[in-house]
Image 1 (tube, chains in turn blue, yellow):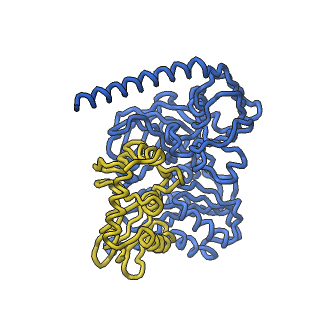
Image 2 (cartoon, rainbow over the protein chains, first blue to last red):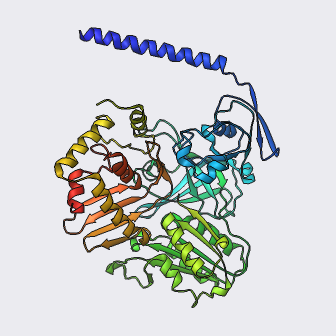
Image 3 (cartoon, helix red, strand yellow):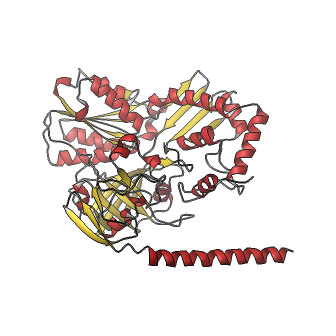
Length: 373
Length: 150
């Protein structure tokens, strides 16, 4: 009896495998889409590619890297592009990632668009400068209990040009139960003057695929691919007061931005940097910014602890990081001279910071942010 | 119990390495629908409902969100920390994108705590899925009752 069941199971599995193979062959023969033209940014670039593959991976083969975190499995919703030609309605796999405005504008997940016909898309021009780099891990340093500093030496190409505040995608190789590579975005924390080394500040997210790898598997000497530079978070020209607010690993872009400004001696009436944590154990790189404060007269570093422990012997600001900022408004920070603000952290921190800054009179269009979302 | 195609697709996405490194099942080999059915029965036996528990958690989370990742005490009974992290995770049932942040609710009297994510809260409240035994973010019905004083 059991032998009969096994026989039927094997027979069923065998038939399924044969059918799958036949379907695959038929798909290759019948669904031969031939050459497809991808028109990018109204004729600025035109690619002739073989049809049948997803737009995301096809563009990647042509060295146009659309940001993506899941490698095309429709689980991250990052690889959005605007499609300006008619390719049919959104797929069910795209809809969870689209708001009404995006649906209206025909924003699509490039990993879900199978190239069957000519297509026109709009992408940011800055993506044309994005490259894939081979790198080597040259140092891993614990900054605090859950945050590491990772430094990568660029091997090929061996130098990069980027704006401080931009991010890179790190390609995490398969490990453990993972069978495919994973791609995640991290702000670059080093200055652009360091053209062949990139630094990142990476906080461990429990169960996070990439951060778990960085914190438990990554080792010095290992080769890792990255895709960079990406993003439109960078400092805008102005000479009045600039405010930066961050929490957690949101310090990364500001380390790049502020040390670059110091290096280039960028003129501002004042530069204020507020960074928040729960207790002293959440803080890192404090001495670095305190040293910068001593060397750069216009720079003011204001770390804020929400609930310092008695043993922290904390002498600085306490409360929410946004309260640390508002305490200075109208006193040490002349709001009439406030030009712009830069924010990096959780959606809650960004929203709360926008609220206090707009209440202080800063136009919302002068608030730039890198939201952890 | 027979699973619908929607449940089978969600089950695939909950396996290790698809959405998260260790998946949603821990060391539990039961199918998704069986885990849900068993936990629904446990909740019923304990005299608590998903709706009441979700309502209480929503209140606690709403109180803690303005603390921007810092921990606060609510009603002198619960310490609540809502720690947001970069990135989001889509629901395996394809009905939304949720922050990767971790929420910790500790009952200060008993010291017992619930640790879950925005996504695991959604899976709990909308789909009645408390995750498999051994999963890092499994919500045990008896812990839910004890921590929330239900």
